[in-house]
Length: 230
Length: 363
Image (cartoon, rainbow over all chains, first blue to last red; front, side):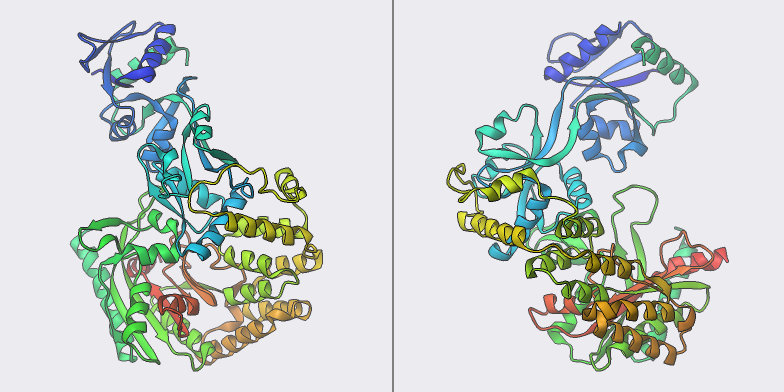
């Protein structure tokens, strides 16, 4: 029995994951052509590389179809209920950093905090007859954050891309989105609430709790963690 | 769940509705699928964490009923006349976002009373009726009264805006406390806020506006912030009274005397406390052991329900860790919202037969 390691199948996240393992003595590589989603592992026996979309890795870990996986900590928290009962964080990998934040138009000079947002939302609902709309694709994380901080009278509207543009298009009044440098936000005339940081995400190596591990697999994991220095 | 277990639960539910219909309640029902917009409007985005959502091609977003109260009130407001008493039984559905193995669907029996002639008597009727149905098991009831909290906030000597902000967050204790800390001056205004209000016209150099929220809305809020900054702080005496009120957790007679003491300095709650006293009398008249009945002023504050007066819950004495077997309360404001401005005094409660049976098994 091998241990299945899920890794993002393309882009910078894949390259940096490969490098992170390389630096620790384990070589991950795509086999064959660059378009093929099969891979191999050198430097340790019994580990099988599975290339997947980063967004699917949380689900696969939770289901026990892969044993280990590299993905953004934001995706795990968004996609899994009670995430820490389903997966364990083994290592924060120090790249793929991005902050999930709440942003509003620069011109809202009266709004700097969640407290302001809440008050603006109450007034907005009275004026417009509907709840202030926050565009996001991180529904669970945003809803939990706003509930914990006692913000009311808002609604979430789904936005799977170009979220910064929703305010200009008047399909939302505020957004909750991922940003690494804040540049796209500034270019779109938006500012981050001073206490609007929902989650500081980075690429993280996770272990699933669900799957039944054999003695062999436990041994492979022990060797892997030793090699990785964890 | 086994077939036998399911049959036990449904039989018990039927027993309860039989008793209630024999007492004069009308058996009613509600659709499984409820329009999502009504529930979202009432509960806000939080309902999405609690209710299962699905899509109907013609009717749009729908939710599997998370309770019966909303549809029963709607039906009553559209077709009913007071006084009215309803009972119902059926499955309700709740997502369990924090995982765990709590059930996502359960059988619920309800009793709803629309009768404004004597609110204290109606409160007592619902409470005593549910207590009667729970006579197979040792139950620990707790009561509270959101109406007393609302009256206390209404009576605070501060601006109308501040009172409204506190009323709005009565059900969110963390935000409620943060607001009070700010209004009392314990939390100083932020640097951003003082800088903003130091400007004669903060909008002069403001960046261009985007989206629906207009210039007029922003200046209106700045005016409100200026009013707030100029307002005298809520006095520490008033704050202490409010904290004392929230901390009341005693048997009903002791709670009543504690609240009467607080009412001397916070006269706005006097009428609500009189209502509490009347309810105690009405409960005693129905044979409830008021001497030992617990009253907690904060009870019901963290539930998502729409209660605004009397609230109650029944835990199992033998298995207090289980969710309450029955809960209920008064929801006058909900009928106003769903009735498009006209409301009727309403109070009701629900029992979950599976939890009663579980408590019987533990005992």
